[in-house]
Amino acid sequence: MSTAIHAAATQSVDGLPTAAGTLVASLAAHGTDRVFCVAGESYLPVLDALYDHAGIDLVTCRHEGSAAFAALADGKLTRRPGICLVSRGPGATNAAIGVHAAAEDASPLILLVGGVSSTKIGQEAFQDIDCAQLFGGIAKAVFNLAEPSMTGELLARAFRIAVDGTPGAVVLTLPEDILYHADTVGVPTEPTTFAPTALASQDLDEVRDLLAAAQRPLLLAGAQLDSPRGRKLLMAAAERHSIPVITSNKNQHLLPNRHPAYAGHLHNATQPTQLSALDDADLVIAVGTRLDWVTTQGHRFPSGRMPRQALVHVYPDAERIGRYHRPTVGMVANPVEFLCRLVRWDPADPTINRASWLARLHSIEAARAVWRPVPDEDGVVFGEVAAALDELTGGEVTVVVDSGTFTSWIYRYLRLGQRGRLLGISSSAMGFAVGAGVSAALRGSEVPIIVIIGDGGFLMNCGELATAAQRQLPIVFVVANNSSYATIRLHQEVKYPGRTIGTDLTNPDFAAMAESFGLLGLTAQTRDQVRPCLAKALSHHRPSVVEINTSLRHITAYRRLPPASQ
Image (cartoon, helix red, strand yellow):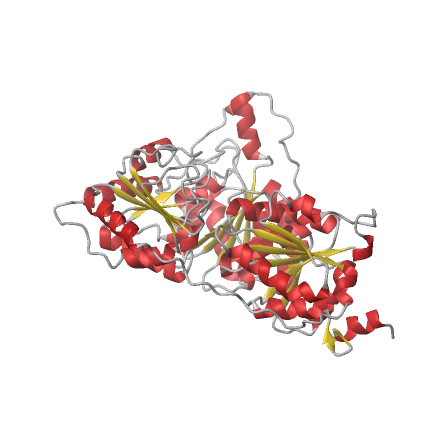
């Protein structure tokens, strides 16, 4: 038996672990219990090491793009880097969409790429690709494993960088021959822990004074509060200080939506009347958010780069403080620890009555959330689906959203509860939700898991229905079928009325397609069929697809297409 074959079979060479063996042991030492992949010959030693490691669940996906999305979702759910393993060339380029999404979403991801042999790099070898060039502009770091003895160190570095400051993706290329070689260090790396940056007492005193004097404070909550402790402290802070809470993009779930302090969710379709009311705040405390493009509505909220209201920005990355909005107080600190301090402070002077401010912002959001049925014209108005899900689940649901105009109906009419969860990505990349739904179901849930996706996005990564079927995961895939790339159709109608091109779609029978995968397939063609179909799918407790024949004219919760453009 050759040394290489022996290494692949036993993960050792002369009594020393191979680089592949150290890699897998280090993944486990960092808490990794799941890896998403599309198998490739360039990293066979890693697959073999995983074969012997029962503590890591290897999830075989049907496309590297959806594998990367699934890993990204897993990172969001676990608050540690999701792990995706792909082969060189086509595998790496297919997975690039997940790396881009991680950058735009500030979510931790580690992409492991099996590469060509180290002696063939740069020689136009089969499927060779320069990952540093490919990912250099979107990953936080790109490494190449040049020596087996560097395996543990590079992986530890990848884990640290992926979560440090503003989270993102780290790419590690694994040359094929290096994986077979002995690692002379051979010790799996342990996670590096850091104490949170101390909160400066002078800054805390200034924030306390600003809050005490504020008549209309507003707490803007971001993704770094997305943990059980963070959500608990957010509610406690809102209640103790009578502060309305607005959440950053794709974080609608951070505060129960029926809570009197909930003021809404900043997203692509946040309406001007609501923004105008929010802009009346005299103090904005932004905690755990980068103040990214969508959350700030194109850097217009808080009011411009030089906000007229006082702004407190608490985020663990100094590079984000003051980048687009000059804060009155900027704190490079752990957002959850900041909230811990906030809830200890005495509430505001009772002469400062914030009740009307709190009620005003909540009432704007609550009034919008009342669904009034709309007659079917060219299909089911998707608000009917969102309202039915709200009624059937009481908001105790994990809803995974893809990209599309249908999301506006979900944000408006599905009010998430104490255990509710919105899972989406800031990049709004189409095709995310199928793999992300698989991730959510694999993590287990006390509440139903519902994927909301358009016909265009669904066909991009519907191969993961096979993964859901293989694992018998209790996911309800709701497909909004209006036979159109509707978001682009809407832009066309605005800029080139009556001249639509490239956005009409011809679709299969999605329910029949689901049945071919071994899933339950249902179709709702009228609004009267929506609730029965959803109820049946929710009670099925195995994967199912509900196709909704969706209105194109009622294209969003706020916009209509003229009849002639249907």
